[in-house]
Length: 269
Image 1 (cartoon, helix red, strand yellow):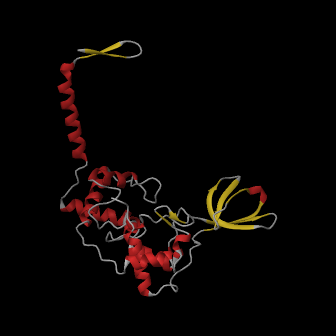
Image 2 (tube, one colour; image 1 turned 90 degrees about the vertical axis):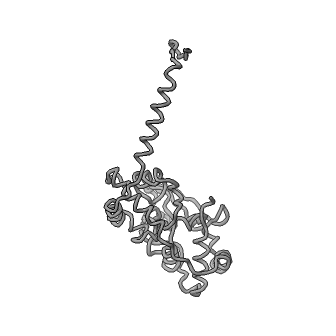
């Protein structure tokens, strides 16, 4: 026996209880692991597929091949390295992203969806046409993409960061974003145009807004903050994007190459 001292009095601990405590911990750990075991019955997978189509397919694709969200046709998912992590992502979502949690589902339904998602890793992914090396040259040269987008800390800050865009977006989604940027503008982005009482107009991305003020960054990267009482007009251009369409700038082959390069950009393992 030995004593642990608190601020007020010593606490006596009997070392003979240590094996019992270790046993209880092992049982608890085993039960916790069991709770994240995914179901494998056909009925569970069918239920998981139905839930997936209703809640997940809009972003991840009806076949799991991606869209606004990443493709799930992979054995290793960046945000869900094991089954417990996958269930947690489905239940709670991912903070700071467009991935919401499915709190309306029951714990069993979370595991059924996870089981279905895991089954998608056995579906072969469709190869992406194009040459990534030529695509990189187009990204840096003809497309001038680095003026607005950054990769591994190099480039502009106006557009989204692209270091791991291959993990976050499907090739089909990237193609649509390049040829028709306003087809699916991220919900987190809002273009605003403010007109000061002096007549000065500034257009840019809204960074913050409350009842009394609004902050934005113009498309030259300058930050602005206004009291609303000093503004004559505020226009919120939902669905508008400052990115131009490259549909007519690139040939079909060049577009394939650029997309192949973007798809190759993945999180370092």
